[in-house]
Length: 180
Image (cartoon, rainbow, N blue to C red; front, top):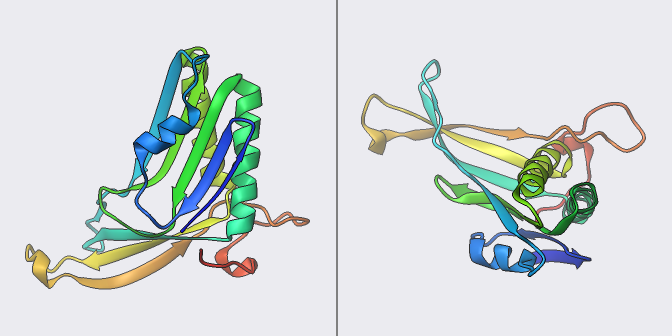
């Protein structure tokens, strides 16, 4: 089930389903746009030699109502600041396996320079402000026998969202959040 909002050329969505690049780009297509830029963030395999672990998957949770509102604010800000014809930000929730997309940021603009800059700013703002939490699932590497790997650690990471009315940063425990 996807939760989506669209306003004035700004499209945002949270979904447990695999992300669809073509559908996301279609949301921002315009005859006024000379450039479409897409960023696809994927789950990468990351080795930690000191701890002899590797990334197995990432799991995302969100406070959906706040996350959608934050995504819309970011989209409207980028659309205005860079003169975009459209912007779409789609974030996956739930377990995301290696090589799968967890976020898509697509922007359309008259010219490529504005599109590149807007796409990067939108992504950085999402990472810093949106009420989405990531859990790293790490596995222990038993020599070179990957069949004997075991999950040894799952760690939640919050973004840098400030809690409204305070000067401290939010963590997953600070907000009455819900899994979508």
